[in-house]
Length: 262
Length: 118
Image 1 (cartoon, each protein chain N blue to C red):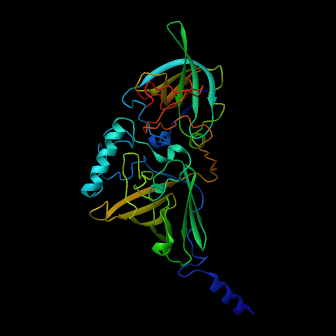
Image 2 (cartoon, rainbow over the protein chains, first blue to last red; image 1 turned 45 degrees about the horizontal axis):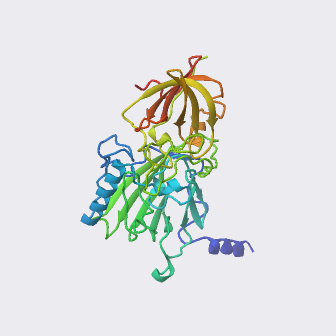
Image 3 (cartoon, chains in turn cyan, brown; image 1 turned 60 degrees about the vertical axis):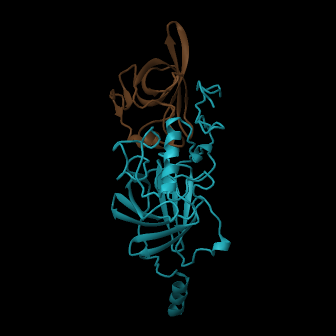
């Protein structure tokens, strides 16, 4: 009887995973550093995403370097809209690894959920051995289709089928970085010590990149007992986007403070 | 009692929208009386009455998310209506009565945020 029960448990566990060996990623985490995606190449070195003239150096194709240059110009004129400012769309992948506020990682044998307080957002990573849907059975979404496999204590995440920049509503960061819908992202996520998570993110994209682009993001563990809250972006959004892409600032009366609103 | 809360990094104020309306190269100090503290997502807002040449202006000062701010010591009561306070902001580029919060000093000497930033 005992043997039969063990067999049933074994059959329920996904390939390559074992409930007893799943890592402990519990608690709340926060990204270390600002929301520049690739801090290794940002110019100027202390540049903040969204400040005029700040840029990174992904190995862009000429076509996407031109798109990036156009986006950087739009930031200079205050007309580069951040899609998430509409308070209704997810950050998407790989931007979900690049947001402020708290992160949580819910690790189960079948799935890992990366939950971002900001947004709020959730990335579902299937670790049950399934495959990506066939091309005719999938369509671009913000977070795409994410498969995970365990390599020891490292979760290797394979992400495809993101919307990308085609519909001009998925960006990677507020310097104006964008990718095409053909982007393929592989992320190695692991806890490097008690207080640190690390995501090694490698992006391949035949349309936007001439070679692989690797970025490392880190997250610190927040104190034990930290609570994570509703983000409710639409609760009091005083920064709507104008029809020209300008981010406005509303006064307490609901009218724009801005002298230019178009 | 004197206490100081320090915001943890510039990411705290980097939230759901572009900050291009603010001038990060300028720091403006304004003093006045709190009209209202909006402790709501995605950003907190301090509404401050400021006297300017005998005329009362209302300033709108934007902070980070209440979620992260709460983990750095802020509470819904931090800016009580009627409190006297001086606030440093990155002002709006177009000169409108608004800015991005940097730090504040209350009448009793308490400070919050990066008040020492010049």
